[in-house]
Length: 235
Image 1 (tube, rainbow, N blue to C red):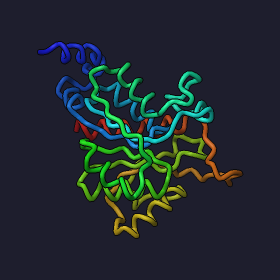
Image 2 (image 1 turned 135 degrees about the vertical axis):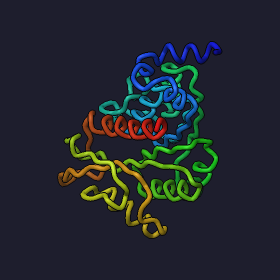
Image 3 (image 1 turned 30 degrees about the vertical axis):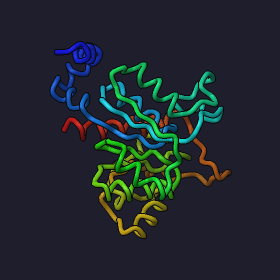
Image 4 (image 1 turned 90 degrees about the horizontal axis):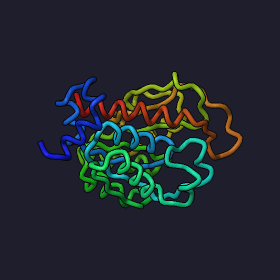
């Protein structure tokens, strides 16, 4: 056993006590691409890093802003203005130095989505984008590439964690973002085959175009998504 393996097993000793060394080694050899490093995506990265996922590919074009401080795990006074991929990568390496972290500072669109899905080198993609066009382009490209993709629907304008559900995109309801995504995917010939997290909570009438958000809702969504991905990896 090499020093890296010994260090990982010490770091993950509490986890190994729960799920065993064989399942933990599956996580150590797994690779996940997280697209969108905001309120949801940041917590997905946090959980995957802490459970020992061996490779994380991070995609985002944004920088940390003051308005992110209420809900994003990477948002601190000290990180405002910095690249989200840079901040997230540094945090992951602080948690798990053995994790291989790669980054792309790009805005996902129909032109580059296929390239991201095919060439990220990861077996699983976590879609945490909040833009409908970009989200649907990534989902379509991932399915075309034969990659497993899990997609987060809307977490804004929500207050009740208990209303979160995981289902196929065809079984979603209530969530305005899920409705918009279903419409675009149908135009792309996709009506099912995408696992998503969505909320059945009826959103209030929005006072602004920008969705309102409270700290625990995107965090909970990210943790639930990470749970689903982890369980998929370990079987």
